[in-house]
Image (cartoon, rainbow, N blue to C red):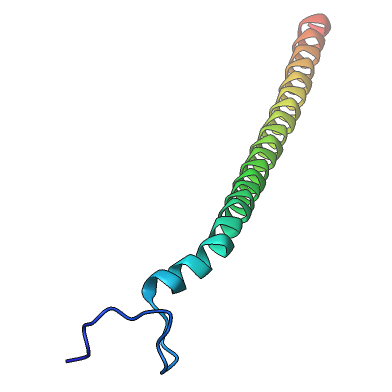
Length: 91
């Protein structure tokens, strides 16, 4: 089993205490957290924007299809009306 005594800063073999290692990493970690949070926020905003664009495109496509169907139905109704009028008027 490894030596369990606490290591000090004056160790001659080059080892570093866990407190010193953690302390040295804290400023870098503290600086990295806001950057990581900002990057995650940007990614979520981009994903939401992409989803909104997809919904908008789908809605526009459905509106176009509905307008096309309405135009076709109107044309069919006009054609049927004209045919009926011609049949009734010719008789």
